Image (cartoon, rainbow, N blue to C red):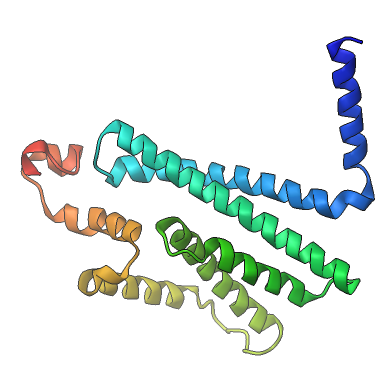
Length: 212
């Protein structure tokens, strides 16, 4: 038998296995691992590329190494978390015979502790990203459930004013408390715009070679 028929039979066997409902939970965990790895790489690679070449010093080799490392870390951690979360959810449902809301919370807590509990730049960015969206979601849920009254006017302008007021106050007077990547961005916007020597570093570039 030639190679092509063997590959066809193998592909048929794999597809047959994937369609079996009895293995769905386990296979969903594996696909979750795959999706976590792919999504982590897709969103981290362009971000790391831009931030590294904008704000990081060093040789081209060092910059590329930093981009690859950040992308790998984000991709790996997200893959590990999705694998852990879906695996624990499936395990709890199997043990108790049905799915409860606390299954999701408990599985995510354990996954968050194990995967994103290490205090590093990548995990810090991810956790801060989730924190803001979690607070938004909880506020909307509190309104839906009637725990707090629905605002008569759009609260977003007030929210924006407070957020920007606080972050600029922290940046100007307690800069060390902010995340390093945010410090870099705000330094570029608010500090570097105070310094120039001629038209070259006023309009064309941020810093001239003579002004470093």
